[in-house]
Amino acid sequence: MARSTRGISCVLAAALQLGCITGQTFDAARLDEGPEELVEACRQGDWLRVRYAAVSTREFGQVVSRHERAAAIRLSDLEARPRVPVDRVEVLALEPREVRSGPDCLAVPAKLGAPDAPTPVGGESTVVVPSGVLHRDRTAAWAYPLAPLTLALDAVATPVLAVLWFPYTAAGD
Figure 1 (cartoon, one colour):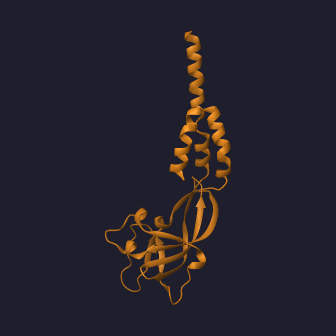
Figure 2 (cartoon, helix red, strand yellow):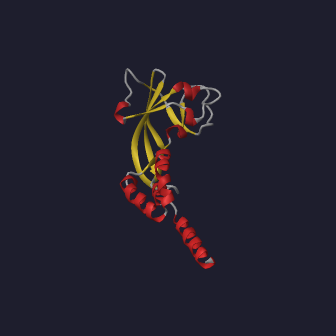
Figure 3 (tube, helix red, strand yellow):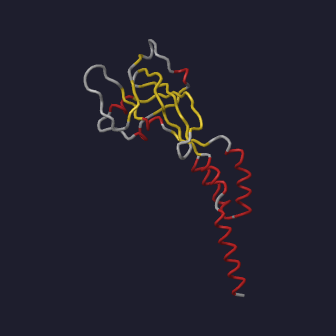
């Protein structure tokens, strides 16, 4: 009897070591996207509209893709002292074609910088956009079609993880 209990314990421990296949799939599909360079910046009221080149990388910096992105950033958040943390700066995603300097959006000099970059002194003022403001995490599109399959594998291999799949997916994406 003790032998069968020990065997069952070993089988359960091995099954739990398999882990959540769905979670591992979504972790493998996680991409970090950050700005590489600012292409254009213009001021429209209290908003700084920027068009920038973004690069998507995997966990260890392997470049996956490059895209042109655009965003509107509230200028009062960038100019506030003490500085507003980058995750609290109001940013609205835009289509790149929406950012064009002209009479309704005045071109301004801007550059990417660290959140604690010093503000230029004298001369023409350059708006410093902390690179963290334009950073975003996303999941690669190939992970979503695999979700039903990984859920089924989790349900067979470790049934208790199937119950946790829905809260994980809701919280993660």
